Image (cartoon, rainbow over all chains, first blue to last red; front, top):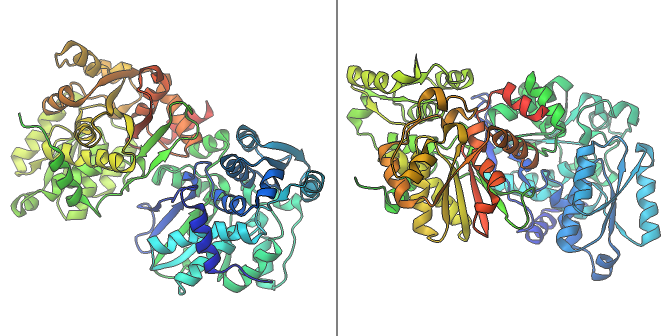
Amino acid sequence: MRLVTINDVRAAARRIDGLVTRTPLLSCPWADDALPLWVKAESLQPIGVFKIRGASNAVALLTDEQRARGVVTHSSGNHARALAWAGRAAGVAVTVVMPEAAPAVKVDATRALGAEVIIVSPAERDSAAEQVAAERGAVLVPPYDDPAVIAGQGTLGLEIAEDLPDVAAVLVPVSGGGLISGVAVAVKALCPTAHVIAVEPELAGDLAESFWSGERVTWPVEQTYRTIADGLRVSPVGELAWQHIREYVDDVVTVSEDGIRAAMRELALGSRLVAEPSGATAVAGYLEHRERLPAGRTVAVLSGGNVDPALMASVLAG
Amino acid sequence: MRLVTINDVRAAARRIDGLVTRTPLLSCPWADDALPLWVKAESLQPIGVFKIRGASNAVALLTDEQRARGVVTHSSGNHARALAWAGRAAGVAVTVVMPEAAPAVKVDATRALGAEVIIVSPAERDSAAEQVAAERGAVLVPPYDDPAVIAGQGTLGLEIAEDLPDVAAVLVPVSGGGLISGVAVAVKALCPTAHVIAVEPELAGDLAESFWSGERVTWPVEQTYRTIADGLRVSPVGELAWQHIREYVDDVVTVSEDGIRAAMRELALGSRLVAEPSGATAVAGYLEHRERLPAGRTVAVLSGGNVDPALMASVLAG
């Protein structure tokens, strides 16, 4: 299995330049002075999530014939919205299969971008997307386990390496593994001494179990769907992502639900950034696992900010 | 009375380079397609507010003798925090006089930065700061009516002009007038056709009355203290600011309290940015006065994000 390379990531960066925002790397004055923290604020992308990078790269790589037939995907929400956005920008029709547990805010946002949304039960979502692809001839753009998507997400790691070349640790949330795969390729190529650390909710800790056992394990959806981090419920990580994780990732930590809420609160009040639970998970990793981080500068990837208002209100009310 | 010039603003920009964040100018996908909007996210400064610019410029201009005696100011909170931050960075002692209505979060944040805080009634705050200056020989750094502070705030306008040279309108919240004075100098010098528009809460609409009557009027604190925009309760605008406003500002609009809350909600959910009420006021101007804006690209200055969590929770709960 060929892994994505730093050259693939650099090519993706050229391809999506001007389509996505070069998000700021923001210093966190509320962090421990002895272990300074920066957040990569992907919540400031136009659609509030990093996934615009991978989706834009995948759409940019379509042939004219593929463009005419459109694209299809399955997603818990953010990849869907990203693909809808990238498709609209490129004039390509987008169909999205979503699990019934996806927050209404994400379903609505995807439809508002002109995509057709089909709702299914969590167990059906892979097969439903494949069925649409077969029926319509549309190109399936997977949410994470795809070289174009991984290379696109990796552009975020490229920017971290450019903005903070002496970074000691990069904390990345993990669901299907596309984000951490791309980021790890870029960070390890440009900052070889930096640790790349995966962060998962304890309630969806299948990668931690896989990483330490050496076997890619699957947790049932009844288990992973208990976390509030609705973007991190995928299990197992993709097969291609798994190969990147084994090659490039240094550590995997898990965080509590309370830790995710505490991180959302800290980001809102200390950094003035709205993070969805999945987006705050890497910061929760910083808050709960300081002793496990190498000395030096830490970056946490704030992957997205599309939160349900009622949940954010309850987190702020404390 | 000598007005601040674009050269003063450029000199300030060089002086504070590396001390403050060059904040992003973020496109708002939720805005009207026919009247596109960007926000200048000063909430992403390390202390969450633009005032770090003016304070840093003022501190950088101190002589060695002045540095040894320290600085003092009065402020409803954000300038205080900014001066405390700039003083700490430069090793200069800071004393702050605050009105008793200042939110606890701002008082605590100022103290946490090592400043001494003295609480007084709103009517006393000018005289109390002057008394400290006289007793200690400290340099008074006013929150707005000062050439160094105005030039420092103007660096924000310089960045808008650099990032969006064809901007058609810049919406700026007004309290004492230091921010809009500096921004107007920069924008009018670099983008002469752009309109600079002041935005105030209706409940603290003294500048609107002044602007249209030609007389700088004062509204009593009992009146201006009714707005939730606690950073915009100063009346009247400063004398020096008033001269800049008469020279450079094109229009003044006022917004409702509901409009300010709606803007806070839109910024949190649509742009993933936490804004305090004062910080959301310029966006409220966009939401409530579209018909009054020139065609083309609008920028709203999101001046700060230091909000009380309970207020933000109530805005999100809707």
